[in-house]
Image 1 (tube, one colour):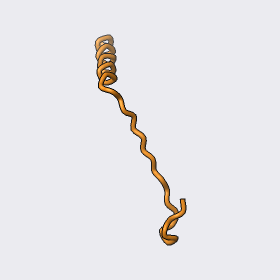
Image 2 (spheres, helix red, strand yellow):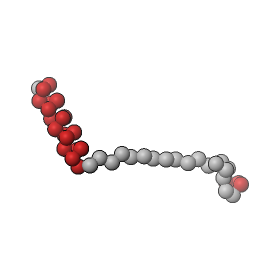
Image 3 (cartoon, one colour):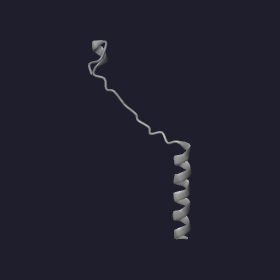
Length: 41
């Protein structure tokens, strides 16, 4: 990407992506973690 003004030099774009989980996904993940912890202990 060319800089503007010309004296600014070349510029880059940075893209950040974050996934979004619904509250039910958090609950299921916690249940799986709890079950694995109980199995190992």
